[in-house]
Image 1 (cartoon, one colour):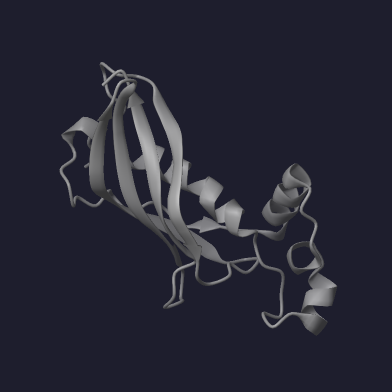
Image 2 (cartoon, helix red, strand yellow):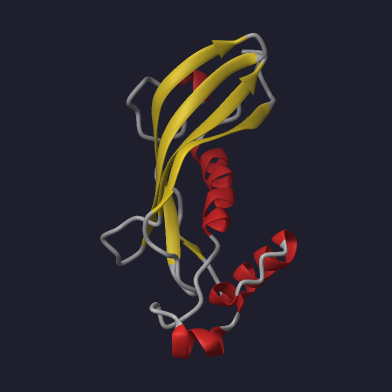
Length: 149
């Protein structure tokens, strides 16, 4: 059962999100949006020959940008405070490459809250798991502001 942000307690893990498949089309769209067309991301043929992964890999920041949607699916909207803002990311690390065709999901735990003049700031320690792998794709601390709270 999902809760509002204000109902969460420190150390509480959010419901785990659904697996998201990262396709080559997703990687290509991200490359186009960011103008990062490095061959390791967008050239499957070259990757078969030269990459240590044997295939293209997603941009690390593509994984990062998918996290907020997982958060929104894991919490209920607050009936009083309706504005939720991405406030940034701390201590992000890319641990294992996400290969084209991999499925990832996010596991987030509330580790800190901080009252700001603009609202309540929530800190989530988040891991992006890769289906079938021991190492996660990414670890980081994601910050979300519930404006006005």
